[in-house]
Image (cartoon, rainbow, N blue to C red; front, side):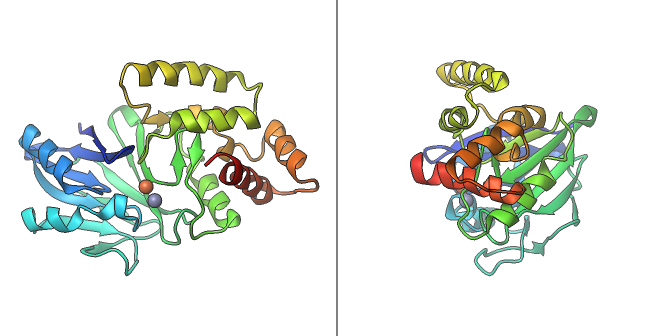
Amino acid sequence: MWSVRTIPAFSDNYLWLLAGGGGRAAAVDPGDAEPVIEALRAGGLELSAILITHHHADHIGGVERLLQLFPDALVCGPADQRIGGVTRVVGEGDRVHLDFLPAEFEVFEVPGHTRTHIAYYAEGAGGVGRLFCGDTIFACGCGRLFEGTPVQMCASLTKLRKLPDTTEIYCAHEYTLDNIAFAKWVEPDNEALLRREQEALAMREAGRPTVPSRMATERETNPFLRFDQPQVIEAARRRRAGLTGDAEIFGEIRRWKDTEFD
Ligand code: ZN
Ligand code: FE
């Protein structure tokens, strides 16, 4: 068994602490060291590994400080000069085994938000998978295309959405309500989406994170995973006639949010 602890950071980031046997833990995307150090202290844990999804400061800003305190920690990340401290470079299909967690992480290359973005997927207890995907899939949204093309991001999301329905998606930001507000413009009649809005509102009012979400929920409500659904295709074509193919539809939905909502 291994558990995932949620560490809120900055204004809307989530860092994840994976606690395993023998008081050892791994941190995913430690953008800030202090809240990680605090969570380790509170749990009586020692940091043995760091998993990095991409080079943005809100995902790697705490790595240097954590390595001062835990110099032996394994640091996994993509091949990217912009990320310091990586001791194990990983790419598509690589597997990361951490001996203190009964899990093996499979690495997916998911370019789009950045050129070298990767995601980590592990089977958890009871066969429920956990996906640590940084800024690719968000709850009811996806990351902006800072370095990649719609073709690349669409392929990345297509890869991730094939994971089982029960997969828990640990994304790195609490953007859910804003994302749902946009999704309703794309699919105003999507009942699963309207239900999700009520659930998310209740969670936020109770001060709870809406993350992790589940793959089944994303496939039903996230417009950025629904580029091949008739309502989403229609909504994109109302904005730009003649769009054809998954990546063009996806690209138009992304552009729509970029230009009118963010
Ligand atoms: Zn980012
Ligand atoms: Fe981020």
